Length: 377
Image 1 (spheres, helix red, strand yellow):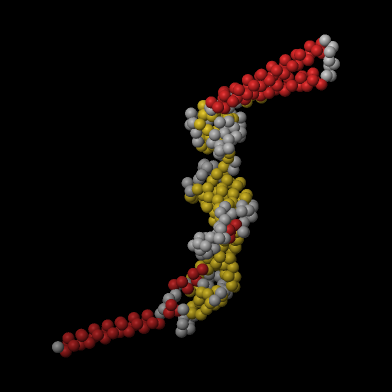
Image 2 (tube, helix red, strand yellow):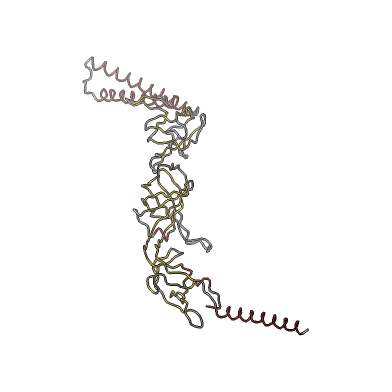
């Protein structure tokens, strides 16, 4: 019985000693999460989201209305300036054809009348009844020339309406649309037999296809108004393209829009809408690696360095504690609280790390303020 009592007493003493040691050690040791002041580079960047497009692209439209007769160039094909792209077959309305034919016959009748009048006056001149400078004779000769020109114009107009072909002087007018530039066919919007609206119409002309110089690619994107205020042409840019996420393409800003793409209305009372207008930028002079093939429409993100500080003292922003507008860091010490506040002077920030100009030194340990509980506030 005495032996059991001794064993029980020993166990109680042992457990009690363990509890005392644990409580004592936990109360006397309260380690803080530590961060080190390091040297590094801070960059303030602007981001632009957009896509890769050709620097020079045009839409092909027809100067005459009609129906697509033949297509000579396919999507992806390289064409030279002056190369045939599409032949448009005229498709005049019965009214237009009738009017053109009637105008030609009327002009031919006027030519016959003018010729007859000139013939009569020429006979009088031959008989010596009138002099060669007689007003009516001079006017008759002029009317014949004018009537001849009108007949020619009406005939050419009828030919264009009927076949799309006409010869005017030394120039051969044709309904075949030629490539205005050398480039690549990006897309084709029509098929053979499809009617098209001309550029001469009051309606929007039909886009037949588009051409672009794929040897000159640029980035087009949008930045916020806050970043746009700090951008100038010539700034270096790093592009990442969606199909090549691990490859960085260098370029420079070649254009910053003067006006935003979308202006918010001052009368708009919806406060949930952002007033951060987007401004378009263009990035050119792209240094494209040999193993990268850029296609029109590739989505891309541009990173533009606005400011940069190299080899400076840095701290994670989570180490900062603000008293009003004054930034401080917490430094561990032997006081009862275990730390004291040290005011610092900050420089450039990228949102994650911040440059520290004054207040700490390289390698110094500071407490991670974000991990401090409210008890330490």
